[in-house]
Image 1 (cartoon, rainbow, N blue to C red):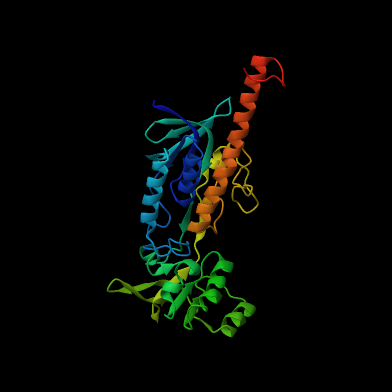
Image 2: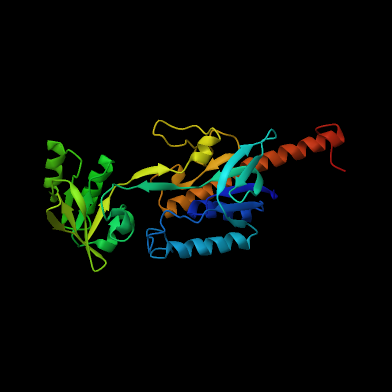
Amino acid sequence: MNAMDYDVTVIGGGAAGLNAALVLARAQRAVAVVDAGEPRNAPAEHMHGFLSRDGSSPSDMLSIGREEVHRYGGRILADQVRDIERSGDGRFAVRLATDSVLHARAVLVATGLRDELPEIPGVRERWGSDVLHCPYCHGYEVRDTALGVLGGDVREFSLHQAFLLRRFSTDVTFFPHRIELSDDERTRLIANDVRIADGVVTGLVVQDGRLRGVEVDGCRTVPRAAVFVAPRFIPNDVLLTGLGCAVGENGWVVTDPGGRTSVPGVWAAGNVVDPRAQVVTAAGAGSAAAIALNGYLLEQDVQRATARHQNRTGGVGAVPG
């Protein structure tokens, strides 16, 4: 076994994890980032809504982030975490897939989420190109084109997409698919100039490497240039729940505004605890968690130094020699 000691082990090398590691490394903490190299936004060519990074490649941002963390002494490990154990002294043993073990005073989990997509032929294959989910991330790039919204398991999100996309195009079609629309929902869609294409979506029509339309009931095609779908968000939180972190009524691990979970020494940031976090939001959450976490470690340092001082001097008010 290869044992290595750190103040903090960050699990997940996306925007949240890397920004947390950067702040911690600059605060003179020994920090390691374990990155499995499976970013959620890997299919996307560009990211948007991030001041000074708008339109840049997600992979370029991660590459620059790793270099910045390394510059301040942080360590990046291309590996996967198998499990985390807490020892009697409150420290954590982070066991990797390669059988290395990282020992840390605290851990920050930033393992993100996975998008569970509807089983419609073509959706997964086109995901991140002309099958999209976030109008704020991609709506501008497909503005003024024929847009579609595929009804998904997350009913409210699907309907919200349809209304929101009217800000980007005058040609929006809602495909209820397996959603049974109420009379009120139909009225609201029609009143906002969203057309409704009833029937079961049986696939996407792709020609010459581009989306051309949505196939309904296997017999008719509604021409579309891009479609949006509301995936079901599944947090990659097995490490957090395995440590006993409290889960809220919504099924997501609970944190305070600084990313602290219910388990002492365990923090979380980004999509693993916030399904709505975009890249810029996740990076900010990573920074906030790092500052809160450093304060937690600092208080431990102060208490230990005070105890050592009192043991040496035998009194609270004694001045160090």
